[in-house]
Image (tube, rainbow, N blue to C red; front, side, top):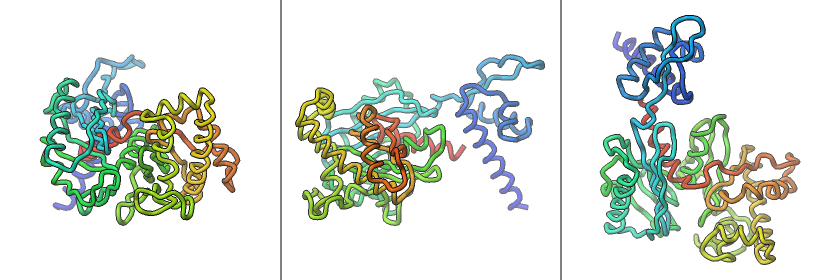
Length: 375
């Protein structure tokens, strides 16, 4: 009997979760609409929405137009009843982002704060976080937790950042980080976080490979609505696949890595500190910029084509460089298509949807999704 009881409880929980997700997807919806779309009985839906209202997760917002009978109650989620923070840690900056249950960005801030594996650094980051939340007028009682993104190998089994060349970290246990923050902490690799933002927020669910072109190059595989981590949590570390045998030395100690040819630093070397200045120079037809862009996209096309041939998925270009590629995607697609055996137009090459704070957003959305899974 206990087994049957547990099964019934699980069915009820799954129904409630499906109903909440459907209401979350819709701006406004009624109980009859939910019952019809999810193929559930109206009493089942009505009981579950009543419980979700009592939990403060959905609310009634008036009535919908009548279609002949009684007007149905208009239901929508209480998007700000819970909040999540995204914290993106890089070598020289931190990104802070606040989002709600709809995944809307309520506030974002990028702060110059060079990384240092010290108590003073993490205490300073926590202080910046608290000031950010004050400026955001966030009710701290509603914060579910902090999603923290790091460049490097984030090993969820060992519960540690086990290797980050970018931060010069060989081992940093999660507990050494989370003890500085008064909220639950959840950890993601930066490219995985960027991919998660693209995947979990997509209206149409698709599998894809996310190529993060920032000051370091990384990647992530998003398949069947989830991240693929690999046996050693190194899936997607394409920054260190060889593009040119015995080529330019890489910071990892090897030579010819993709990172050496396609990191944002390669373009910053021409324009200075601001990546945007490079694309301004490119628009001005400055020869030095055009030559650098030609070299950059040649190597990028090799990498993108190789990734597509391996995975047979769309390749989404993200990171710092990805945020500037909207006006250049056609030329990149052509270069990729020229190398591809099967595609004549390179339509599988996409530009990222989230161009600002993608890693911080993905880390925050990871916290939101963990909460929603328990509803």
